[in-house]
Image 1 (cartoon, helix red, strand yellow):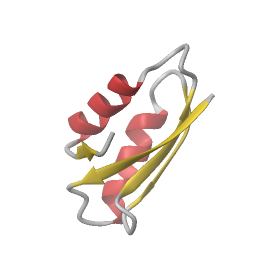
Image 2 (cartoon, rainbow, N blue to C red):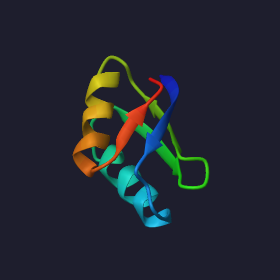
Image 3 (cartoon, rainbow, N blue to C red):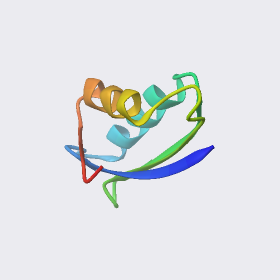
Image 4 (tube, one colour):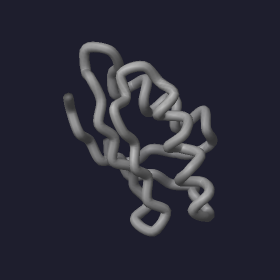
Length: 70
């Protein structure tokens, strides 16, 4: 398992953070996703054998937000 923090832009409220968590936790290989609106970041723990950074970033973008400082 790998744990990474990703800086996210475009969140306007705590519901935005919840949406990101729900979308990430639906992916195979994601153990946990904890997104903080206050910190504008997401801490994600995942199995690198089942999912990669690019798929995680793509999912966040598809949800409507931008990942910076990868």
